[in-house]
Length: 243
Image 1 (spheres, helix red, strand yellow):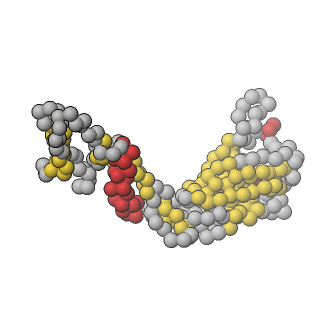
Image 2 (tube, rainbow, N blue to C red):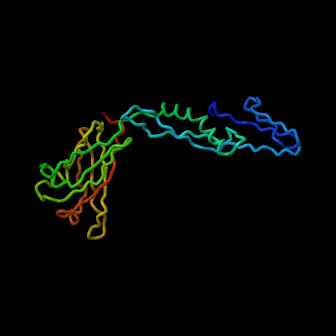
Image 3 (cartoon, rainbow, N blue to C red):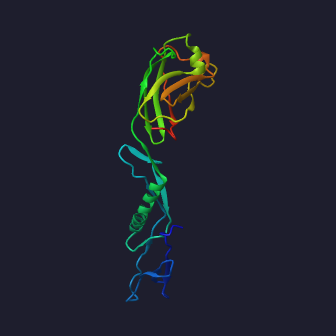
């Protein structure tokens, strides 16, 4: 148990009235006297179990990673003669500094901000799609790429790249780049003619920030039609990234 977390012992007199509160060393923390037998017994409130969330204090342009640590506080460590809320608030105040100290020890600081992606359109010789909208942002340890809408504009000449090596459709703009390549598989919700699943797509960002995509096990009967727009949403972990 944390050395700052103390359990209190409560002693009562022969009339079952609270006589004193002692700490772990049997030292009296607070005592109570009753001058009249008609005096009502004072209510004592003990803190409920609670969790304090704290994050690392980082310089401008950086954020705590992970975003928070959660510091548990056991019930019954702090008492109040005012109210339950007062006991809980006292417990938060007592252990807040300890939670912040642990956050500073256990969390790191990583760049924070919005990272744009430069689209690469269908004039790219290794792409057979036209890019309608393409946006992405980096938050905490992940990059989120949203609303990747593609429309079919060319058939035939570049099938080898699309199904094998993949095509480049965008490039991350910013200094946060992966230190290794991670592949993400995404299955769209397009129903096939016989009721099966849609196409399986493979996305990855290379260490230079280029976004690649290729089709895995395509269903030829349900390839995108000319002008059809598709939307994808996925994330790529950037743990151990280079800045």
